[in-house]
Image (cartoon, rainbow, N blue to C red; front, side):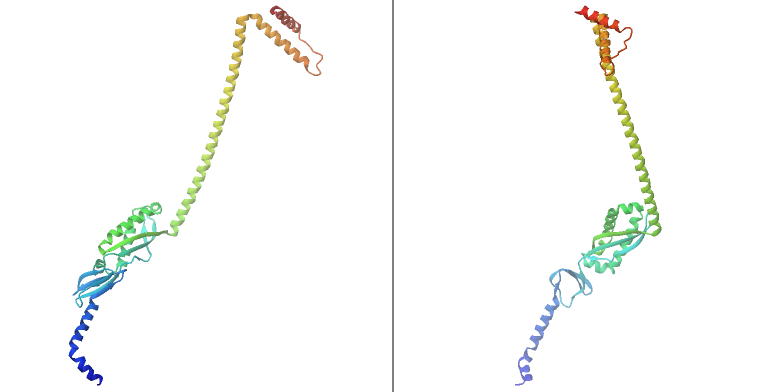
Length: 297
């Protein structure tokens, strides 16, 4: 038998079953969709949204349902954008921003917005200009974190209707024109000079205060010393007064005579002073002292 005869005997009567089997295989292949982990499929039925297929094995109705859009759900980064903005004190700045986002509802992204990246870029630019317009230049430089938080919050609210989640929005740099930079540099140098003068003046003031404190302390110590000396003299006077009151005037005269004798002895004890010139009343002092001593004994 030739091949034509074999085909006619075996295939001919079963052609219907073979075609039916082929149709079933084609339907199965057309009805099964395996979606990768990083994507979601948007399915339409006769031109209308039917469903969104998630990662894994999914089944659709062959020939009626069709996968129209394959959307990546990975996080995306927009190209860095630079836009001009004017602060509340009329300073022109150039702000460089970067935005990260991901699609969480593909059906909204597909049917509500045509150019996602362009729409987000325009939204971010408008929000940045609006926020910077409320701040002065110094506030923009000092409160960058709060500015970033405000931009991120407003961008997230604006893109919510597009099925997009903004994961990060960063302000990378705030640049100034040459004239503004020069003016700020002059202001910075003037501020540094002012601080140096203030520091020097405060140093001199502190030195004067310390010197005044030292003088005051010295005066206080000298006054204390004088007061102690005066107290000692007053005490000695008081002792003499008590002695006079208790022993009479002769005791005082006796003490004076003894002091005179001690003074004469000290004068004669020095070297090269063998010849002593005595005052006229010196002998009288000796006599008085001797008489008093004799009287006490």
